Each structure stands twice: as structure tokens, then as C-alpha cells.
Image (cartoon, rainbow, N blue to C red; front, side, top):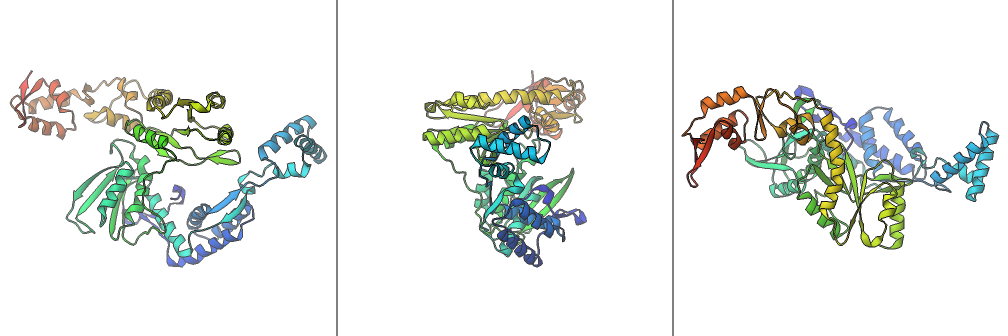
Length: 502
């Protein structure tokens, strides 16, 4: 996938169509591949300068998008005689002591720093900023693709990026079982509809995010993008997506031949490093909380290294994330290395589950990371309690931005939908005043609407008929609404019910 600023789409005729590559672009792809291969052993900055020179010749987004894919094939490392952070700390402290204001005083500060570190001034100077991205070294470049395959991967990534803002995806495929299996693994809501239109099959799989259309479905765009890999594997397929294009709904249509999946596999079950991780993930996801669980999220910078946490918890109502690491029993060297990496993490909310047999809870807490001790298996309740501390603050922040009184535009609206419209959890709106609505169960209803319903609903009416009347005005909680109108339901076995006055 690409970043959204690299998205190329055509909106001609009110549509939404990715601007895919053409066979003429193979020469450009080959040139970029050669540029990356030719800069092994050079700095990242030199490679970036070479790519930018190609960008200035035209097709900026295409060049930058291809380079984004090639970046993933390159290995970039920090190479320096000393750890850069250590060299900087010593040099800056000695600079302060010397009072650097000239080149001679700078050399003197470097010499003093070198004495402290047991090395020479040249090594200190070389190490000072070696970890800056532009000074890191491209140590290897092993691309899986030739020019044609690179363009295929680009087209796939471009289509995936176009799906980031999708709110609904409709797919017809000659391999529906594989499609539905992938949808389930991605935890997306779906239904299967029969259609009479043209396409590879007469059945359509309609996919949305959980609780659509009232939840923040845009955050599920990345799952739609991952789903495209499975869709495009089928011999014949057709995909239509409703895309929120800066507040305007547009339809994007893709079909067999638009994109292919070069050398990649469709969505697969996540792998786990241990049974402890697998068991925890299964039990946590069964809770249906406002936190979603992501396996092995993006790498986190830890000094000259990176840390890939086991999981990330994503809050459903904002971009807030809590990373989660499970430390099981390993060798002392492993534990020491892990603690060193955790110490280098900055500005990260990290929760660490620690096997009690390691005896390092206090060491981790000293690093300002929260600890959940466990023995044998991680208790979901303990993790839930730790997350609730964040949740309480997030809910309070959400509620603080709401007025004391809320006046929904609709005559009938659920608490769930109102919270989604404001981008807050339901608990943030539940204690607000609703001067123009009456609360009926989990639905807010204007009194005038209730009065009009009282004229249409009467004793002796079949429950199914009353439910249909209520559904017309957007009320799904028939039990609460009928009670508010003064009726109860008299059940007649399994054949249904009849309204009676209370």
C-alpha cells in the first residue's frame, strides 16, 4: 500500500478511478531499479537525491510511489565507530564545559569527549550524526521484482490506497469461499446478496466495517485494502466500492485484469510466537470492546534499532494506540537485550505482560512502562483493567468537547448512532441532556413523533405490523417504544404476538 498523498485517481464524469501505470512506464521502473542497485554502499541521502532528480523530470507521484515500494526492498543501517547517542552525549557535555565558539574549541571538545570514551576525536566526529536518516548506509538491495512486476505491484498498491476511504465494498467473484473466508479473518461485517446483473456470478458479497454505517467505518479502509489481495487472486472478479472522497460519495469499479497480485499470498491467518500470544488474542477479541487488536504493528524506533511489539490496541474513537509486548521466559541475554530496547523507546504508550519468573517487573516500571505480571497465561481481565485507565481519560476528553445539551436533527436516533456522529463512545453522550427528545430505551425520540405513532399503533394490532410502523421512522427497539406508547405484547405461542393496553 502507498500513503494517501501518493494516490493518483481520475474523477472524470463523477467517478473515482485509479490512474494505473502503462507499458510505457517500464523504462522508468527499470531506471529506478538500477538507481537503487547502484547506491548500495552509499548513504541514504545520496540515494534520495538521485530519486529526486528523476522526480523533477516529471510524473512525481508515480516515481515517488515506485520508490516507496523499492524502499521496502532496501536494507539501511547505521554504521559508526561509536553508538551515535553516546557520542553526542559526551561531545555536548564537553562542549558545554569548554564553551565552544570557534573551530579550535570544537576540536578541543571532541578531544575531551574522545578521552572519556577511550577513542580518537575522528571517531567521535564520525559518529555524532551517523544515525540521521540521510547519513545511514544502504547496505543491500534485493528486489523481488523486475520492471514489469514492479509496475504490477504499484498498480495493486495504488488500488489498495484508493480503498482507504471506502465505506462499503461490493464484490462478485468466481471464488466466493476464499473471499468470505478472508472477510471473516479480517473481522469485517458482510452479507451475501443475489443479483440479476452482469458479472462473474449472480451473488454479491457486500462488505462493511463493524456496526456500519454508524461507526467510524473509514478506519476499516486498510482492511478493505488487504481484502483486495484475495479478490484479485480469483480468475474472474468485479469490485465496486463506495468511497468517501472528501465528503462526497463516489463509486470506484475494478474488475479482472485491472490489478494482479505478483508473488504475494492472499490474506492469511496471523502467526504467533507462542501459545500464550495465541490464547490471549483469541480471548481478548471475543470481548467485543472499543479496542481492536492488531498483531505485530509498525516498528517503533528504539535508538539505532527498532522494536516490533507483539500487539497494538487501537481505540475505536480516535487514533490513540497502546502497544503491548508479552515477555515470556527466555535466556538472561534475551531479557537484557529486551530491557535495553524498551529503555530506548520514547513517547510510546507501552503495556508489558511479564512472566513473573523473570523478576523484572520493577525494571520495566522504572522505564515508565506499565506492567501486567502473569504466570502461565496472560489474564485478559488484568489487561482490560490496564486499558481502562486509558479509556477513562479518553472518554473524559471526548465528553469535554460535547455541549451539556444535545439536539439531534433526526426525530428518532439511537444513542449508538449519535455517539458515532460525534466521534465519541456511547458513554460520553449518555449523561447529556436532550431537551427536544425523550429517551425510549436506547433511542431518542421527539415527543411529536411518539404522538403520531400513537395514532397509527392500536390495541389488537399484530406485533409484526407494529414493528413495521416503528421501523419506518427509524425505531428498532420495538419493546421500549411500545411500552412508552402504553402497550404490552400478548404472545400467542410461536405464531407471534398481539398488542394490548397496559
